[in-house]
Length: 352
Ligand code: NAD
Ligand code: DAU
Image (cartoon, rainbow, N blue to C red):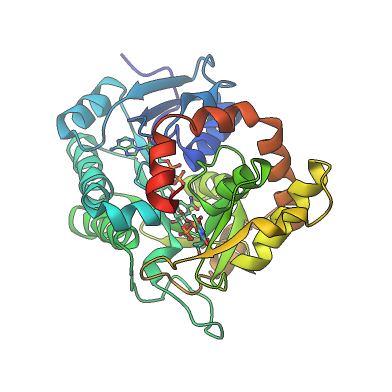
């Protein structure tokens, strides 16, 4: 029997931070597509991120592990998957430093499993969209020009090495087997539903709880920040209009030194909590630097603008205000994800 849906799209990692925004956008904007959200629900996956779409007729959740090849084959067959937006990954650099094996397993072998399942089951018009990171390009000095799609890969952390390897496998499946693929490499995302192991939600959570703010090294590293819904919009656009076989960089043209960004967060949280502005700066605590800490990431997304007309929609000040408000309005979400295993993780990473 023919599928009643125009497309049957597998989104992996849809219960995670970025994945949940991509799932929400696709389910709401394309009622004619069936969105199959496949997620293992690791510590970073949370179905509470998707309560507003869970009962939609074009949404379906499958709990599965991308490292289980036979399970992937079954999912492709059972749901007649014709396109993939692949976001499932181990995503936190610090965890990759203490546990590199699980990064190789999920990010490299998991991606390979999905590519192979697609190769075996696909005929005709399909697309494998691989969501990747700007960290594959390595690190910039303060005065270096931005990463472009032509920048040579030079990953440093086990996380970025695993993402680089997965990008290479995706391109290899295109070049060797003709699998229709597209890749995007994005800068640091921020916004609602980000697990509080990453800088922005971790610091918002600590400021509200009056806990020390662990700044790595001198706080001078630079990141380019993009609001997560702008990333999801870019993924939608590239999925529909990107050139098969191509790579697109996605970034905010919005570089911040960590310590400056941290001061903006402190100011915003203090104001919204009715504290004296800047009162929480006393929580700043300089700690041992991250091993192999990349100095600066900055990405040139001119290709995406010129070819597909995408631009970030939010100014950073607006984005950070929205983000802080969201976490302060959803303190139950924060309390929930920071109970249990998070406490052990936190203690191991940062001590008491
Ligand atoms: P996240 O850690 O918040 O979510 C990852 C999701 O993948 C979780 O829901 C988790 O349960 C799921 N998952 C992990 N292992 C799995 C497995 N073996 N099988 C099935 N599901 C599994 O990550 P995120 O920050 O939302 O990142 C999503 C993707 O975007 C990743 O591929 C990451 O490399 C990439 N990316 C992230 C950023 C960023 O700033 N967060 C920037 C650029 C690219
Ligand atoms: O560039 C894209 C990447 O951005 C994504 O591919 C990764 O999945 C994502 O985690 C992110 O990586 P970073 O390592 O840049 O993000 P993180 O939030 O962990 O750290 C941001 C900066 O803040 C970095 O320079 C390290 C610093 N930092 C981070 C933490 C967690 C601190 O100073 N203290 C901290 O406690």
